[in-house]
Image (cartoon, rainbow, N blue to C red):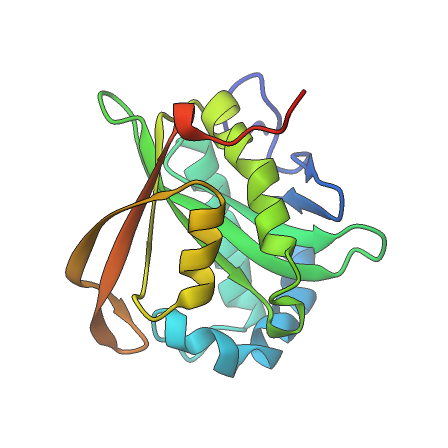
Length: 198
């Protein structure tokens, strides 16, 4: 079954390649590596994420997540990728484009996570440098938005490095780690994307 944008690729076969990383949609077979990395990185991740449900790392919950990803791709509502290291295929993290809005908006919201053992090594920077042109050129968005906690220096630095502009401050914007928290809002327009020199 073809899922996603007609004429581009199927979710099962989708893969984007970088120098050190590659991205593809999640599959049921990714559960063990995903659960192990998320479990080992729990203390590192939970300050920046919604509260994890009791079955957060369970196989059934992951299968539901994969099915939801497929439905969102099919309906052009959102897109999710897992990020792997080239060479050994180790799972590094994930990236999600959610809340895709068409019509006069042509925008979506970017979210990402990386496992603690792989943080601060430039993997997420490279993955987003590969993915952002795809989002603009193939998915066809005009604007990508992102939000992060004011004290998340790593995420703010990443967005700035990629060319996102700080656009505002949203009070109690998202419920993160059990409480409503303020967020700094960022945006990137298609014409602002920093493309590699040809």
